[in-house]
Length: 369
Image (cartoon, rainbow, N blue to C red):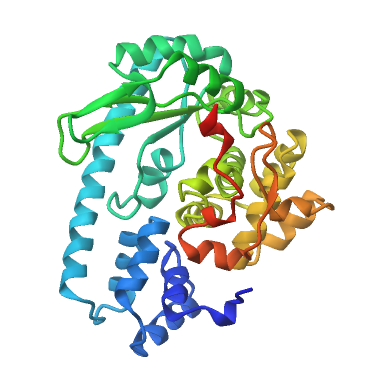
């Protein structure tokens, strides 16, 4: 089982540069590591591609080690990627604003989350945080209003498939829609074609529950608080980010498609805590988690945040959560489909492997329904 001392130079550089904020010690570590000239840049950028931190890592390297030299081809590819990501994010932010305006006409409140919220409010440089879609929270009781609003905006309820060859979207079938309603905490994606080379289509995802119990109460409370105060409570933002990380790290479907361990999700959480939270809001997050039986999701995230970044706040939060039984820390698989299994790999092996589908005894049952 891999330990931190056994990280390759490329793995160490990935962790050091997959962040927005640096301590003086971390800047020194980065400078020292790069001065040793041991980095295989193509291996390093393979890791950053999987973890969706390529342009973020490159910006940090240029900022703190401006004299570093990488292959010209890689530099050009990263520059092009940064331009593309920036234009894509700008297009998405315009479409999100258009959607929010339309939602108001339907007396509907949906809250942008994940990249949709963090890119303009925390990352701010639109070229350093990749996002493949727009994510929102919605009340389950508002789904009929949402369907009317999305139809007005020209979106199609889909299975998430866009065909690049003939520029078409596949609508979701009735059987697929029933399957989603029975076992998923989010709605089938909404897609819309767009005549733009950076954004050929828009994909909007709406979530009405934070975990696979399909309990609507937490998101109802988050949205009610937003309506009452005019802003999202930081503890609610953190709770959603943690439950999302836990879900993608442990669901067979995301493991099968290689989406389970992208480091950008932990980077989001780390930076949000550092930049946007204080002790009061962290305490509020713990209380909100306990109220809604989400302790293990927060604990799971803090445990792995410590293994990756170790900023010093993780142990206190874990202790306050009061989680005793930790068997779930090595488990994966959806409860509702009876797929619970145990990881054989350790965490570092999983996060650096770029593919953990070999952990699965069989394909996700969700795909067979």
